[in-house]
Length: 151
Image (cartoon, rainbow, N blue to C red; front, side, top):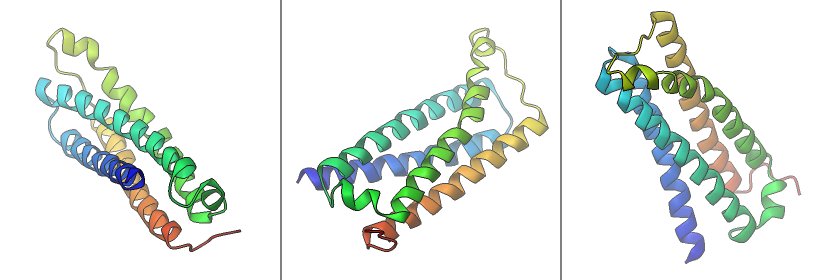
């Protein structure tokens, strides 16, 4: 039962991450208003919380349930999955810093400025993150079926 609950929570966090990144992509595409800027801050915070939950729950699954740590750490798709997750995390720093930089303007009820070049860059980063998340899903499916096991 514990393994099933952790799997459910792990997958739920992954879906939240995908959903909030999609929301960020849509919000950044449109005109930035006070409402959309505040929404981006909230959505990005949800992204951070979901990413931390995904990581913690994932490692709980690795060490305390399922196939055990030995299996996972001898799985090429698992190692690639963790590497891709780290890359997604590093890519997310720039959008997060941008959104956090808007807090002072928002406190003064001012609409943050988002230049077109900056908007394109943020959208490109978010597209890359979403693509890498799909690659992570492929790695998870391969890993669960023993493909690429190095032991």
